[in-house]
Amino acid sequence: MSKLRLAIVRQKYRPDGGAERFISRALEALDSEQLDLNIITRSWQGTPNPAWHLHICNPAKFGRISRERGFARAARECWEREKFDIVQSHERIAGCDIFRAGDGVHRVWLEQRARIVSPWQRLSARLSPYHRYVLQAEAEMFNAPSLKAVICNSEMVKQDILRHFTLDASNIHVIHNAIDSHRFQPASEALRHAARQQLKLPQDATVMIYVGSGFERKGLKAAIEAVAKSDRYLVVVGQDKQLSRYQQLANQLNCLDRLRFVGVQQDVQPFYHAADALLLPTLYDPFPNVVLEAMACGLAVITSTGCGGAEFITAGQEGFVCDALDINALNEAVKATPALSHNSAMGEAARRRIEPYGPQRLAQALTSLYQQVLQTS
Image 1 (cartoon, rainbow, N blue to C red):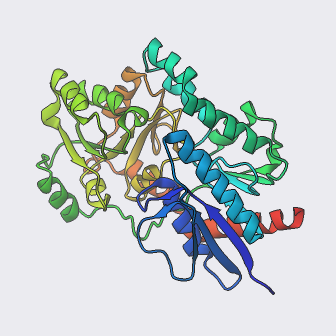
Image 2 (cartoon, one colour):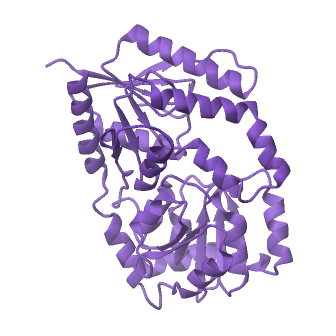
């Protein structure tokens, strides 16, 4: 039997990105005798598996639209020339067989962002040539007759797509991200003690952790405001150009001494080990990997209705779900989440919830989808 020639399209491959972690986990799980794996990308950071074939498409770019349009054209030319059996794009490029909506629906993100920006910024987004380009590219891709299947990493994104585009629901497949629950483990008492010592956190404090870069979208302002009205501590893992603005906010709310800004971390696990719960009131996030990682580490999760990860949480069992901008509800949730040393039931429920979602489950779901797509070709 000849190998299935699969091409995966991702413009810029960053090992720490959520989409890339999905790709690498899927590729490692799928890496088999039956598959010939190809990556179409502008640039690849890190060391790819020598068995994968890299196709570098890096046309000249003169700004954001030129970058998107140029890569889309080059990627399409590459896959048409190579005649792959299946093209799975993680970018909004018309002509692919499968689209993975890892970034959700752009129109929904703009609607959510409009809730927190000034009227001038809303107008600016409406008139922005870049946003108009992305909206048009998204519509063309969803309406292309070549599109056979869409992969969503949450039911939330599936519903967003059905609301805004005329796709058949049976062609939209919810395939949750994989989590390696052997690698991400709850902390022992000794590990928690050491992690807290390192961060100068009191051993008896209740500690929230926030993980994400792009603080506006991921809701750091709401997280700080929710923690300010409590005695909880907050560890912030991630980066943002506006970092000083968030430090000033914490200072104004008299809680800067209870915050720890630690920047981007190659290995987040020791920081999860210092915490009792994840606090991520993100405005719009299809299903961030950090929710799975935190749950695997035995942490309760407080997140928002705009987060796909909310569908893994029953209020009071694995954590709490609130509107991203409802500071009172977030504050209540923060106060209702106990320290693991006092009561670890929520954290244990969180870990149990994600245990079935290993790489093998992801590989089986993708393999069966690929077989389906080949049958309809």
